[in-house]
Image 1 (cartoon, protein in one colour):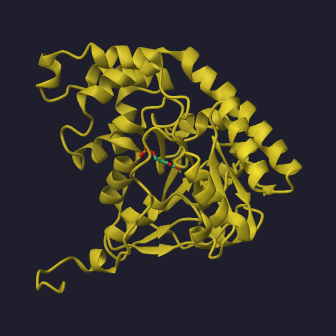
Image 2 (tube, helix red, strand yellow):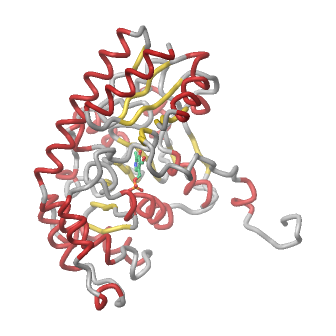
Length: 352
Ligand SMILES: Cc1ncc(COP(=O)(O)O)c(C=O)c1O
């Protein structure tokens, strides 16, 4: 019972508010939420400008785009669900598989929304941790998998740590989790090059998610995908609302996947930035962890708060991830163009 006497679900009462700094980010160099700091394809903006009143005023029809997206990702349309960002995909997965009291496995620190939706569903969360070098802790994870949690959420690469599991390692996880749903979140696939989408027919308990928020730069439009075997996709569709993806996102997706040059440019620039940033931090004596994503996690120790505040004053946003690690010290930086990265490095040099 809440203080007002209105009855709220116990799972919601138990949740702590999730309070990331969501507002006031416009016109800043936003290196804090792993969006695409380069922007989006000009073809996307043209497609949005062409949206007709008839399209905007009708409930969205997604079949044409779903078929085109399926071709783009190399699956059959029946193996793909479009979702309102990966976040809706995660919510749909939890709604489909998790009853109150079921166990959901995560390895933390990781993307916050797995815990969010699992807690909302009243699940029991089991969360071994990455080690101090941000490596996956195999013994703990395999021991928990043997207990058959309902769902195991695993982003590959992981955020904020940046580490990547290889395909043989993912094979090992799937072998150990025959009685659990395994969700491999490939939000950062384009930067890592490792995907298990082709395995969805072989492993009936495998779901892969992708997003248009990173390489395609469509975070503001909210578009994600679920890939799984056709039978399971049909079951999950039953638990999804009829119009999860809006007309603007559908038009943008079509344009975004057609502009392969923009995607290639983003990947090229981010990889160059990643290498330059790691070299720059090494010169400044700052430890950073190897990353396969469009971001890098670095350890600044007791200087963290000062750095984050000083960057914000200069209009550069970076993300203090210290609370993930239970002590001050960790900043995650999103990478965009090498020019943006050099600007940040120059500023860091001054403050350090
Ligand atoms: C691992 C991971 N998955 C998913 C997302 C979010 O994807 P979307 O914008 O499609 O909800 C993020 C965003 O930071 C992420 O780090």
